[in-house]
Length: 133
Image 1: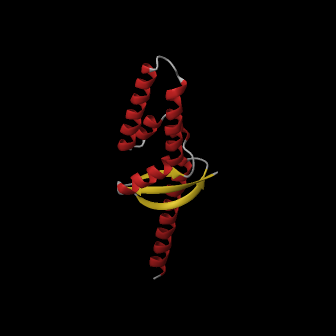
Image 2: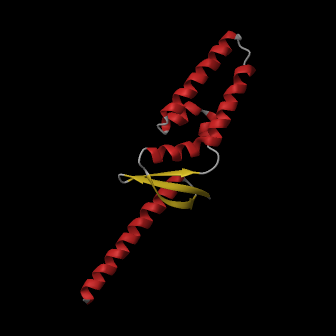
Image 3: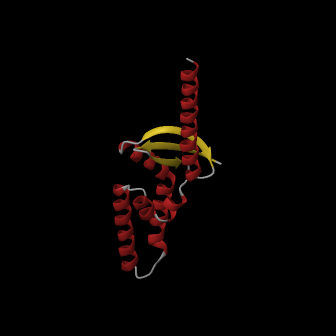
């Protein structure tokens, strides 16, 4: 089980974990585009294009461009979740909960269903109070 921070804006929930992001490690441009981090996306695309140009220039010496690509992947993998939390806050999302769950989906579900249960319990208590008055 992992710890997640859950954010909400306009009825939409986003859960962000802590620690390493495997997708950001393996393919930084894809990860950045998936999460609408456009500055990170364009930076990773430019680095990728530069590495492909270096690969072409070196006529197939594959190990030299691979080393910076792995370094970029490691930086993205280690920083991805922090960047994502910062981006969500900048886009107006509010932190609503910290939960432990098996997946981001489960973390969001825990917050949504927990909130609706609390709402229904409060409504029932109000109704019971009004009937007794």
